[in-house]
Structures are given as C-alpha cells and as structure tokens.
Image (cartoon, rainbow, N blue to C red; front, top):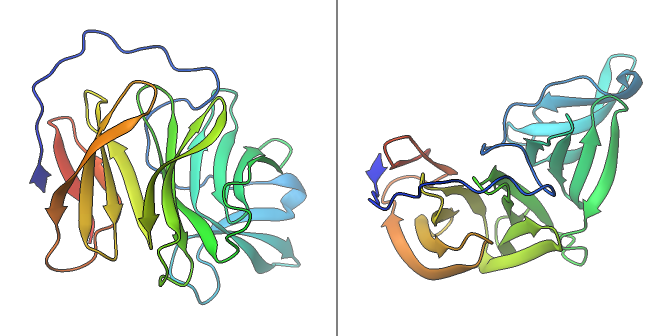
Amino acid sequence: DIADRDDRIHDRVAPLPRHVLVRPAQSPQVVGVVRQREVVLREGAGDAEPGLAIGRQDGGHLDPEEWLCAQLPTRDGGYIVGLRAGLHRFDPKRGTFDLLCAVEPDATHNRLNDGYVDADGYLWFGSMDDNEAEPTGALYQLTKDGCVRRDAPYVITNGPCVCNHNRTLYHTDTLKKEIYAFAKSRDGELSAKRLFVTIDEGYPDGPLVDSTGTVWTGL
C-alpha cells in the first residue's frame, strides 16, 4: 500500500448530478441475464486474458463479440458500459445497448478500459491501444455535455480513482509503471499533474483509495 493523505475536510458533499451515475465504484462484476438469453455477459473472451466479454448464446455456444471494459450502475436501474465502440446505456430488462458516446470513432485499434464514479457523480474512464504498443489512449470524463478528454497520451490506462475528499484524482500509466496524482475541481477540471509513485516490480493495475486515504494498487 502507498499512503497519500490530505487533511482538508469538506463539510458537505454536493448532490449527484442527474446526468451520470449512482455511487463511487470501480467496475463491479457483471450481473448476468440479458434479452431472451441471446446476449450474455460472461467472464473471459476466448483465448484473451481473463476479463468480461459480451457475446450471443446459440444452443449453449457462446461466440464473443466485443470486450466489455467497464460497467457502472445508473439511478434508473440500468448501467453505463464501456465497449470498444464507446459508452453505451445497458437496459437489463430489455437487454439492449444504446450508444451514449462514441469516444474515439477514428481510433479503430483502441478500446475503453477501467471506469470509476466520483462523489460528484461523474464517470471517469480511460482508453488504450488494444495492441498495447502505441500511445493512443487518454483519460476521459463523462459530463452533461459529453465525453471530455482530460489527459493524454497513454498506451494502457488504468483506474482512475479519487481520494476521500474528492479533490485528488489518481490515474495509472501501466506500461510506464507510474501512478499520477492530479488536483481535481468539483466540475472535473484537472491541474497540477505530478508523479505519485513509480512501481519497480510488476505493472500497476487500477488503484483504489480506502477510508483512511491510503492508495492501493494491484500488480
């Protein structure tokens, strides 16, 4: 664990904006059932590394179609999910995916990766090169006006997460083995980017902050 503490205390938390999500969370495990058992969400994607994939089920055979990168709950009981084509609204009752934002329509080799919801209700997420070679990824925020690019470039983004007082955001550059810290305003403007830590052994995955303000990351 890597500690980064801030003694500032905010006496109130602003109400969640109506346009985004329900609570702070890393992408949770997917709950399963979708429309007429035709579309299912499952762990793994063929021979790819373990993760979550979307596919169609036909006679018990699952043919993966697209990588599911992040899934966050919305106030209406649905989800916002990150797919290769962009952010989608998923209705678990109808089993439908409706495009919300085509994040990088021209970057056909990119996909979305981790997502996180801060205490103001904003969704933060990253994109990455699916070949894990080119610095074509970026850090984004979903706002009422659409997806806003907040930092770039990255080959593989991971995280982000936000500290307890909601004014420091942490984000990982996995291939560089670095976690950065940013000052974050209430509306999501980022400033004062600094190197928080360099990982000597292994490659850092998405970080989390616990109730004591300690930053944790998987390797």
